[in-house]
Amino acid sequence: MSKRLDWIQEEINLLKESGLYNRIRTISSAQGPWLVVDGRRVLNFCSNNYLGLANHPEMVQRAKTYLEQYGVGPAAVRSIAGTLDLHLELEKRVAAFKGVEAAITFQSGYCANLATIPALVGKEDVIFSDELNHASIIDGSRLSGATIVRFAHADALDLARVIEENKPKYRRMLCITDGVFSMDGDLAPLDKIYEVTSANDVMLMVDDAHGEGVVGRGGRGIVDHYHLHGKVDIEIGTFSKAFGVVGGVAAGNALLVEWLRQRARAFLFSSAVTAADVAATIAAVDLLERSTELVDRLWENARYFKAEMKGLGFDTGLSQTPITPIMLGEAPLAQQFSRELFEEGVFAMAIGFPTVPRGKARIRVMVSAAHTRDDLDQGLEKFAKVGKKLGVV
Ligand SMILES: *Cc1c(COP(=O)(O)O)cnc(C)c1O
Image: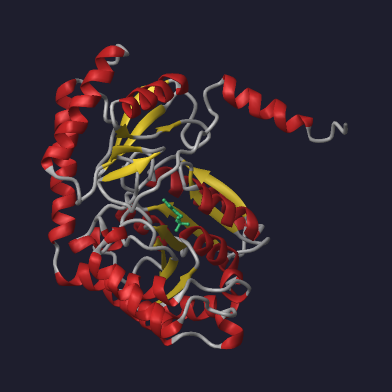
């Protein structure tokens, strides 16, 4: 027997011993406030389906209609075999929704970051990156070959300091930050960041994956929240969270988007999402433009849940958005908490290193517009029960 793969078993054993091995549960139902997970009906506090759109009848119907009309596969990359009118329509609609000049869509938010960053900067350039930025920003930045300089989390003063220090050494400069930080639910101080980047002629890019459909007027996102239209050069987004489908987008300055159509490698060398996905995403934009009802309900549910959790004595961190971390400290406690909740019929995953720093393990609760007050009360009751059992509250 060859030993060349033995190291993998050793690494896996280490993960298991430290409570960091991820056992992925199996879902066998449509997305919604309740799911069938590993054969049990459980309350869903895990998904990023903020507005309950992933299984919305209007979206499903739209996908069906276009599935019949366009078939199942895109057949080639858009830049070689021509692009579907539907993809262009979605790009126009998303740009209008966000109040920016133009947009280009990708296969996912992850792809959007991997495509966009290397198109903007290279070896002679520098990226200023918030230290808690999402993994896809980190990966896109590494792929670009640019020097990566981290600044203290959500700290525009520290950003100014690192720009000052590094400015003379590089050709181009790009600042990247998450808009809403996905593990803590706090916001980037984008207004202050813009002051610093614009004063220094630094390109500004924000990843709005957890902001669109959630913050800003009617869910128009982080740029809208801070009234920075036309000032942020490019926003990255995903259609897999509040929009309830799948796909990614880069939206903002028209010249920059035109450049991405020429140079973004995930656009040039990988096929696009299907017509059914695109049609459903357009339906999501329709729903968001028609009414703020779902976004309002999301916030109402989130405020209620957070206030009640605090009342029970839980530490819900610094979140300014519906993302609700329940801070537990060590990873094994968070994993045990999650398992006990599951036994009680509540699906809420533990999150540990490397997704969050060591010693900051947590359960992340994702409340949605689709939860009823009764759903939330049932969840609260189970959190209280498990919290007392494990000595957390
Ligand atoms: C979820 C997320 C992504 C990835 O989006 P996908 O469409 O799932 O690939 C990118 N950036 C941030 C900040 C995210 O939270």
